Length: 259
Length: 60
Image (cartoon, rainbow over all chains, first blue to last red; front, side, top):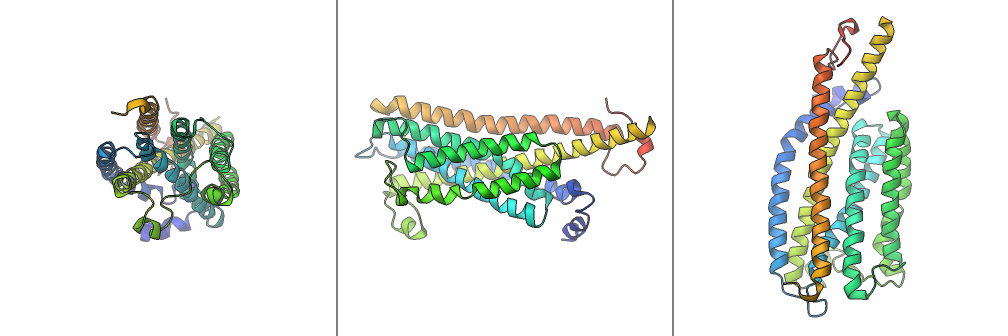
């Protein structure tokens, strides 16, 4: 605890060295544990998924649900975590909040991409089309474009404080899309089906049979643990990048004084 | 195993596996490269706790 208090006091001067040392120690310990849990969950999820019977209506394509639905859940969860971090970055100017946003962007983009591609591969045999411009699909495409824009922005501004503020503001503005994605199937007539598991009540009495529900939930857990593993790895890399940048600036200043 | 729908199910799983493995591997590769670069900088006297800028050498 004392580490945190001390670090917070130094935030103004050494923003890039506030809590990161402690965070790195924590990440180094946690990443291998999370990676093992992720691998076990994937093994269990794939086993349960491939053991599940074919759906009476969808046949074997129900298999795509086990990778499509968790990808979209995690894509939206990632953006929600980024938005919470954006508040942390804007209100408390916590450097780790900005690190968390930057590290989450490529992961969220990858999961959204997977949601779009697997959805398309599921849509063709079930709906007879790869793509329709309906509310659900279009809002998910917008989410992917937002991720791409944030990624470009995060690489475009060199000065970390300005970049952090811009990223946080745009991340928060983009959050408006998350409830639109979630409720698009209720608000508009879409080709996409409504949520099968949308609340605790629905988990207790789901629209899905348990032979599909268990593999789906196991894969959702596997995807979530994969996200947390990759996010910690990405944050660790971002902290290293910032340290390297600080050291290079220190070196340039020293060279300047020496000249 | 997947019948007529294998042409959709197999690519869906293949693309998912490629993207997720690529995400994990590239993060690990970046980590190794960054750690190596950080070590070079620290060895040249640019450690976080370097107090005397005069002792700083230009990194290789």
